[in-house]
Image 1: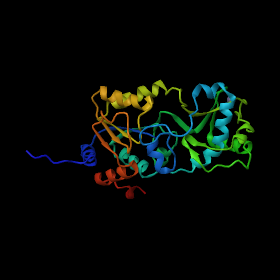
Image 2: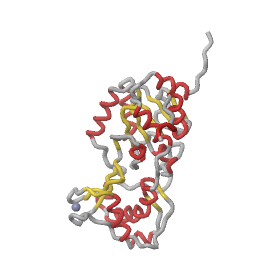
Image 3: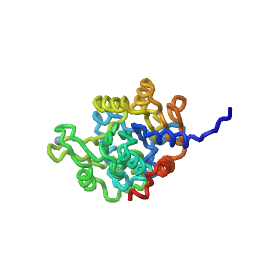
Image 4: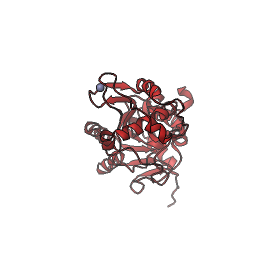
Length: 284
Ligand SMILES: [Zn+2]
């Protein structure tokens, strides 16, 4: 008997041709082609400086001062990012009913900008800011106006780091006064899950229910190093649901996935759409 070797891309295409219902989990690798840097290199190792810790942000005014000062310059660069062909392709697959739910670890809104609705954000979204005292919700764009008045005009950075962070001079941080809630004057926190923070329990349960009804879990652009995303792979495997990976580098489930494509998402996903009869050119 002879067997025909098939490439992972063809395998993934065959799986999608069977009209599966897929839950799609996306990570930082997806937004890399949009100019938003990732925390980890291809081997899943940490690069750059230490992240903000949840409890430190709540307890330590100097941590908040450092966060807001750097974010004052990082946000405008971050906010200029636009969805790439992977975001647009996933939207096409979502519209086609193949992807039932998009779940992202990213704090950007590039899925929404691509037109995907009701995206589940595991780590929150930088578009919103919450008051730690009165729970008033603020648009980040409104808080940015306050930040622009607080940061010295000579403070500059063109270097965007993950999560809307930017490298600025230490002196500019020391001189910086944190923004405050326009309703009560309280301290502000971006609506993101910092390291050591928790993903909402109800959201996790909701995603488990989607996986229960899915044929597979598609993971795009994540090393799955963090438990927040890895838990859904564990859950899928426990439910005998296959995992399909699109990620150029190492992932935590390489040995357990049914198939893996190492082509970058912004290449692989448009190719998949084209082969399935949903070319991106028709969507614009
Ligand atoms: Zn307040």
